[in-house]
Image (cartoon, rainbow, N blue to C red):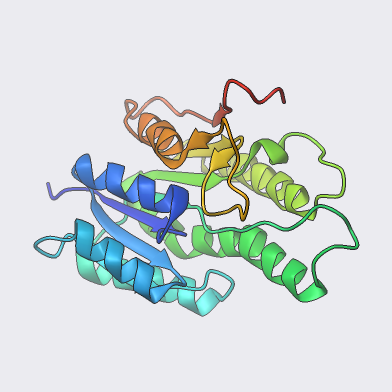
Length: 228
């Protein structure tokens, strides 16, 4: 049997890139998607050998680009075993902060983009009896004052639970990854005492490495210093 295929959105930096490196080390072939062509190509060059890495520029806000990503992955590798719907970004807290355009793009990326990635890849994942992982957040489990970003992650948490309910009995596993504070390029001012991208990658690989009958539904990962 050929090596399994791990598809990652938001793969060009941060958590996505860390998961790509961990998955490559674990023997997966990779389909890497992101909007940043240069960063994506650099990561693919770092990890690629013998056609084992596909770099596919993708804006998950657009349905046709999710379709193109799934089709390119199947054309390259013939299967999709793991999907990590990880693309997303944040916003300043406060309902008078940011621009309406920033809000729109954040909601479309974090929520609709995640749903589009699921929809585009789900037939292949059903066929492989594979695994879908979604990047939610601690912010998707509690209310953060003035945070529309938090609301998008509540939506992703609900999406993951709904998806698992739909797929019960199919053999497909669904995992919500819920990081707390992570020292990642996501932030302009890098936090202190935070988790690393590699800490989250370790959690992702833990979930996918479990026996087929074990479905790790949620992984909430916080630094020791984060109280909630």
